[in-house]
Image 1 (tube, rainbow, N blue to C red):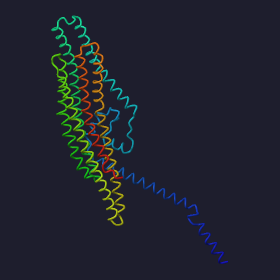
Image 2 (image 1 turned 90 degrees about the horizontal axis):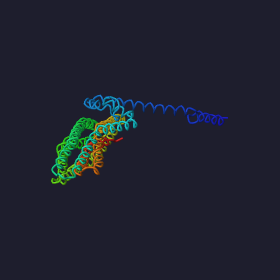
Image 3 (image 1 turned 90 degrees about the vertical axis):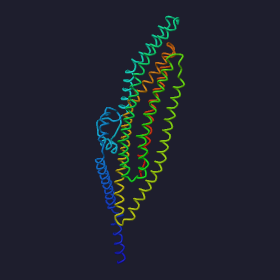
Length: 402
């Protein structure tokens, strides 16, 4: 009887244990609920840290830039820069591809409509010159030269007026990009310092100063005059058959390309190599600091390390969001001007193709040479944008230790 009672007691103990009862389900459910609650608390703490850090950032001048380009499809409605960053972090910043391509198409069509009358005027002048010149069949060479000089001068005036506007537009864009660099880079370096990327900051700070100062100055004060010289020699080369400066125009074009290529190569190589090395060093330093906190401080070291992780996670999100926001503002700024310059160059090439079989070769070659010169303005803008993009991208990749 005693053995029977002992066996019965053991059976009831096993049956009533959590392993065999439905309390296993209750236990597992409570653990999952606690984990979800912890995740929600962590997300709330990260968002709270993000809001506090954004409130301490000075973005007033960036807000003014956003208001100027608020009609661009890359930017959308009129929001402050801090709100844009918040939307990027929350994943709420969406760019409507349809509206974006509609915007590009509209700008492209508007520029064509704006330039088309002047292209037609150039073609009309060239055709008129051919008709008048053929009417006397070259019997009076002096009269033919006078007619050519008048028609060529009218064509040059029309083209130079628009080139002057495009050069002014390019200079404005370079100054605007330089201003954006002076606003975005300090924000990025501030957040990067808060993340513990001291080595990266020591590398990027002089690189950013060189980009926003020296490089932009080289592009504005050296490459822009070289472009002007190339344009002047292109005009003079086709004035008469006796004056030939085509090689000078080609020389200045080669100098322009070589200087730009060397500057791009040296800057990209310096920033890329130094930035990647500094980012690796900072990553190791940050992980070492967190490990030290966790292991050296008794009892609460793990909690302190987790708190540091939350703060660093919020700073990392802000840093990357500032980089994305800066790149969006940059592309929204340069998109319209680049389309305008490209359209003008395209129409000059089209006019040259139309004039080739019906007009004097000097006018045709002049229009074609202008189209070739204008392409350098696009290269000038894209060169600065490329270096800006490389620098911001490397900063976004730095101190990402999660």
